[in-house]
Image (tube, rainbow, N blue to C red):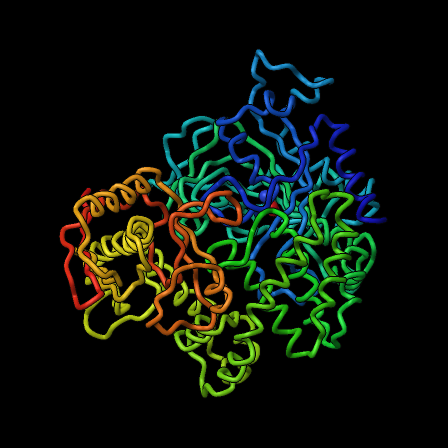
Length: 624
Ligand code: GLY
């Protein structure tokens, strides 16, 4: 059975049972509390809580989808038989809410009838055994747990509470009976960790689950389908839920959310030893001229994720989704380099991914994917060799040393861990992530580099700040300094060039080449230009590029400063590559900067004076 046949079978099966087919949503969800869409239910979250009306949006209380999903939690497992970053998830959903009186129903009453445990389990059983012709090896059901609940539910049945005020999520006897009635005898009881789904993100619907397992060719049980009974709303994250730090409240109406990994189902249906031998993967994997099976699998997995992330608009960067994409790309590039694989083979790999998936995902753009990959490759290859050399010199790998290698050379954690071998045996992802988070928090607050050993929170030479508050102020003044240079160049005749800059929490000081005193009129014009741009709340963005390219691009740079081989170019105002007009300012710079000029406040020049012959100095402040 091909993946195309399985897709069709699944959608048809549930459509006949009153489900509206809903296309996959993007890998980047609307929900800002999660980085990626990790399951089919992500796009349906508001339908469980009653915030959105399924009858109005889908003409049904039930939907079915095949959802593009991305999970980075399994990244260290990739290379085994069945784990992936990017995968597709088959799912059927039922929202349990009463149809809205005014909404038009579907073609049959089935569309207006939601369902719960009985139908959900019977449908899944029928699909696996009848439609797919597979045997269920065992199932799991929820064994019950004590967990903190609200004892005053907003809706639904009140939950039993213990004397301590805690309430229990009861054992799922009902599902057990349903499975037994269907002739499934191997029913295993599991707890919160394994058979309680959700919530995704900061809060959301969640509930106990029942999972279906089938045997692979080696006789091992593989989980293929997870059926979630959404009975609760959790006010916190899953992590908080598992550590009893948040409450569960029963939902007004029960809902069904199921997820079945397409790739795993294809593996079982095609009787292959691993997902990588299925027709979904082997045409990609076979293109990779490397002996090591694990690395071939990692490159295959990462290439698919790269292709789909780029298609959904992610670009490599140092933050959030872009950081994940960059890591995936760099891992592929590093393996390529270590195993002497000509990386132009990636063009064929992306072409193959396009060939397999473009009939389903029409927006996959092969050329765009190749272009973005090659771009990253070009940038990264410059530092990769030196990074590998540096790595070889380190005697023992700890988290902070490893993070420095990542930061200076961009080598991803996975590579450092792997290449470090014995020397990296005590290095773990958790510690590395902690270092990363620490760094991100600092850089979110505005710090890019150079932590002085003298009590200052930030000291880049140009910018100094003692605490978080000062950091905010100097960040604003820093962007204002870029705008000042741009405005001076617009207002004054002659070649205005930066001669120095110094920023404290009180003021900015900017020195520049100019032969005479500025007139009051000129000072006012400079202030007005800057304040108008502040009012427009222009975006402040940056791009990384090789130094030479940045200098050629017309961006301003300070001739006295030594820049690294790859630099950031900060732009205030629209990017010239996407807009017809020039930006307000473009400068090579390490940051930090505000994200929008509106954050700066009012700009005021308080002094203009001579420093030496031909060099002027301006001091300026910001007002709220
Ligand atoms: N939302 C159920 C699952 O992804 O397993």
